[in-house]
Length: 233
Image (cartoon, rainbow, N blue to C red; front, side):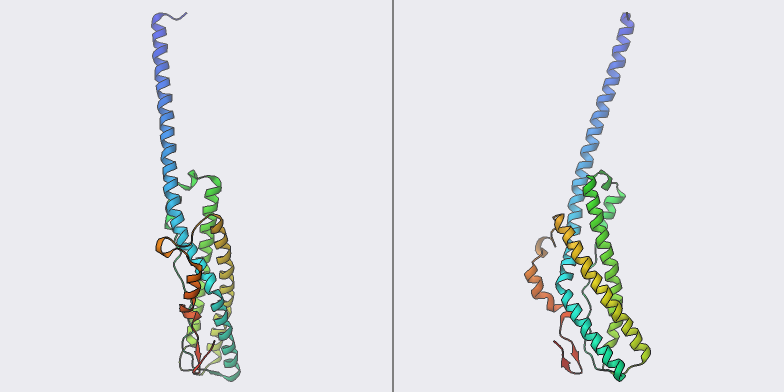
């Protein structure tokens, strides 16, 4: 049997332990709630950022046929120039549109540990989407360089050296390959974002497929190209 003194001590220790356990439970609950709020806020920022990125890939799919048609035309011009040694006068070669792919919200969520507090499947999906947009960005940057080289075809025309033709043929080949893969990547990324219920664009710029199709001819690579004074379709 405990003495009164011992019983009192045990009760005091028990009270202290119970108080500590309650405090820990309250602290853990508060910490869980804080992370839930941070995850919710981060997801809102991520969805907004992804919506802008999806706009890019949706837009790419719409003007993809223009780029393929332009590359076919440029390839025919280069073949004729190789046979004749003469490059015809060319107005504007054009350039694929390029919007920056954003990832600051994702980098912030990752560095602050928010991703590790998300649902596992949710975190994996977000990482996959940003991985796809990163691949898209890398290929788009390469494509821009290839088309910049193709811009050397612009001008009054005249005799062209074998060396310059080789450079332009190489750029044309790269642009075709890069364009093909960008079309595939854009389609895959768009479908993944659609499954994750990411809209294309936000607010006033929310996606309108029909409107974007109407505006597609405004892109430089979709505008008719003039070769030797003749406008090609």
